[in-house]
Length: 78
Picture 1: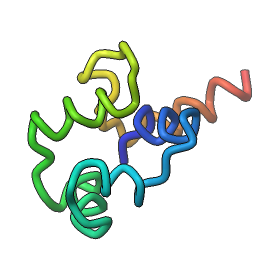
Picture 2: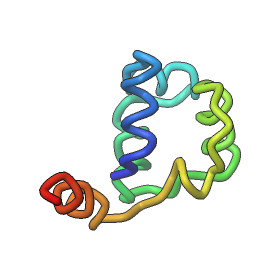
Picture 3: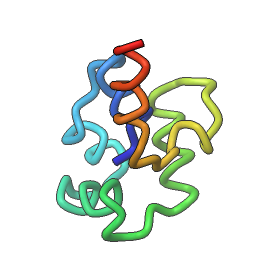
């Protein structure tokens, strides 16, 4: 899961259904790509960044860190 992407979608009030529509793919295909079961292509990643209209680097937007949620929980307890 891409936590930064999820956060940006929430901030922009864009659903995954709407994102898939704007990318020209099905919600199922988008889900496969975001869950790592299918390849997210560079042009698709750039298009997502364009749709979100953000300056965050692609590397950060699509950071796939399984420990990110655990890190947030640890930091919130300090």
